[in-house]
Length: 434
Image 1 (tube, one colour):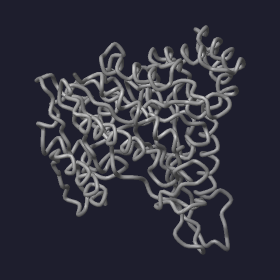
Image 2 (spheres, rainbow, N blue to C red):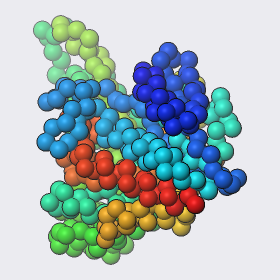
Image 3 (cartoon, one colour):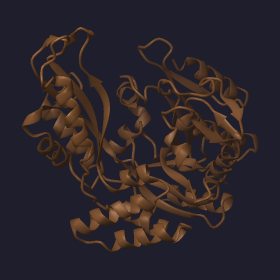
C-alpha cells in the first residue's frame, strides 16, 4: 500500500501551492503521484522517477524495520536505501527550489510510482492508461552507485547509469520417484536439484567489458586508493582474449572492496531466487525446482547465450523452461528479452549527465565521476523504450556492507549522506534554472 506516503507527499507539495495529480491503480490503496513545477519555456521537461514501494522484510533485522530509527549515525529501515532516501533528497531539493523562487527553464516533474518492486500496475501500466505522460525530455531515477574508498567513508567514485541490465527467468526442474519418507530412494528429486544448484553456482559466465563499463573501470583505476585494485583493473583493461578477460576479471573481484557489484558489471549473472519441492514431511516428492533470475548486460552475453550456457551446465540431469508472464508464450518471451537487451543506452554527452557531474564537483570536490551500466533494473523502462534518455544514480556514498543490506536485513544509510544527497540534487536542479 502506497497511499499513506502519497498523502504525506501531497501535503508537503500543497503547503508550497504546487498541484499534484493522483493516478490510482485497480489495487486498493495503491497509487501513483505526479508533481509538476512549471518551467518558463516549452523545452521538454526533466522528470525524477522515485518509487514509493519497498520489498518485504525477512528475518535478521536487529532494529524495527519500519520505524526509520536513528542508530550510530545511520537511518535504518526498509527502503531507506532503495529508494526512499533518494525520494526524500529529490523532494527536499525540489521544495527548496520552490521556496527560493528559482524558475526552471523547463518543467521539473517528480513521478512517485508504485509497483516497482513487484505487481502489475507499475509504470508500464500507467503509461498505457495515460500515454501523455511519456512526453518528457529526460528521466533521472535510481541507478549508478557512489562508492567509498578503502576506509569505508571517503568518497571515491560516483557513477551515473546510462543503461541498465535486463532480466529474464528460467526454471530448472528435476524429477524422480515419489515414495514414503521412511523408504527414501537413492536419487531423489530434491537431492538431484541440490547437486544441480551447486553446479550452477560454480558457473561463471564470460567476462564482457562493454564500452560504458570500460569507461567506469578506467575512472576507477585512477580513483582508487588501493594499489592492488588499480593493478588488477589495469590488467583487465589490457586484456583482449576471453581467457585473459576471465582471469583479469577474477583478479579484479579478488581485490575489489565491492566484489558483488563489480562482478555484475563484468558479466551477465544468474541468481537462485525461489526453490520448490515437497509439501509434507512424510512424502518424498516426485519433482523439485528452482527459479533462476538472469541478468543480461547490454552488449555483453546475450539472453540466448546465457540460456545455452545454463542448458549445457544442467545437461540431462534436469529440465529447463523459460518463465514469462501468463499472456506470453515462450517465443514471445524470448523475443522480448532480446528486444530489451538491444535497447540503446543514453548518451553521456548530455546536459543531464553534465549537470550531475557539476553537482558532484560542487558537493564532493575532486571525486571521480563515470558512466556505467546499472546492475539492476528500474521502472523507467517505458520511457527508454520510447527513445527518451534515462539516467540513474544513488546519490549517497556507501561501503560494501551498506550496499549489501539493500533488500536485506538492517538496510541503512548514513544521515550525513542524506544531507549531501539533497545538496547534490539542488546543485543539479539549479543548472536548469534562471
